[in-house]
Image (cartoon, rainbow, N blue to C red; front, side):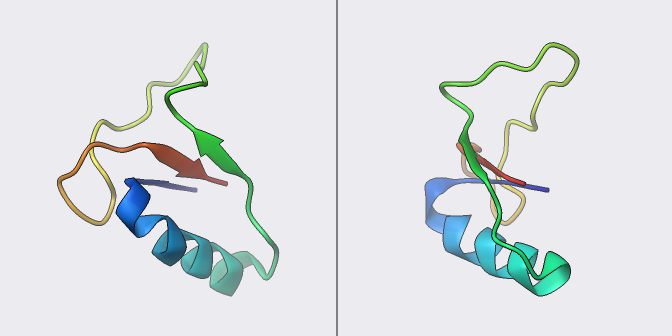
Length: 55
């Protein structure tokens, strides 16, 4: 699972495919709320605002 900004979505997809050998789902964090989990505010690759969850 990777939480990233728009700029780093491609990198997160590549890392997911390398690790799991399967295509990930991309979740837009602006449109989704989680009951028991608050996603990180910052991208895993930089300090920009996290926008997508790659799972």
